Image 1 (cartoon, rainbow, N blue to C red):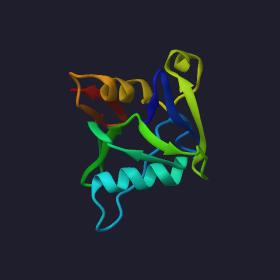
Image 2 (cartoon, one colour; image 1 turned 135 degrees about the vertical axis):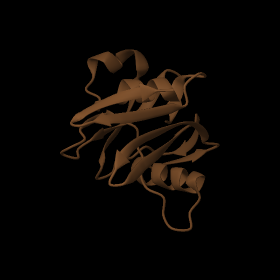
Image 3 (tube, rainbow, N blue to C red; image 1 turned 30 degrees about the vertical axis):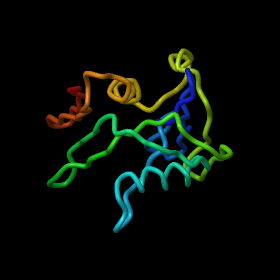
Image 4 (spheres, helix red, strand yellow; image 1 turned 60 degrees about the horizontal axis):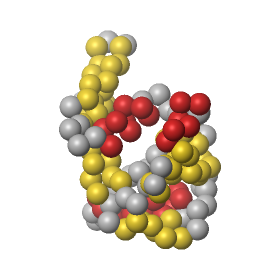
Length: 136
């Protein structure tokens, strides 16, 4: 999460199965540290060079015999010119305006983990076709 005072930098995702405002993100390349990946992916998707990303939580969900882990970072240290990518349009959104905007399905819970001093984990629990969110 890149933030500037009361504004969050969000990506309006265009992927057919994952639409709405969310945080930019991506994958770790071979040989790359997690922090290096966060800096690179943010640069690729936003045009901004971030500094001092702080780990602020983990998101996980089950997948084919294992788990998919997402490391959540935040920073308010950045430079550069904001640009968008093929993944979606980047925009600064006032946190107070989020309730009037279309966000991805789990955005509210994800933001709660990222901003809380007491939560560190967002986990999807699956029971048949039912997926529920558990915050720890």
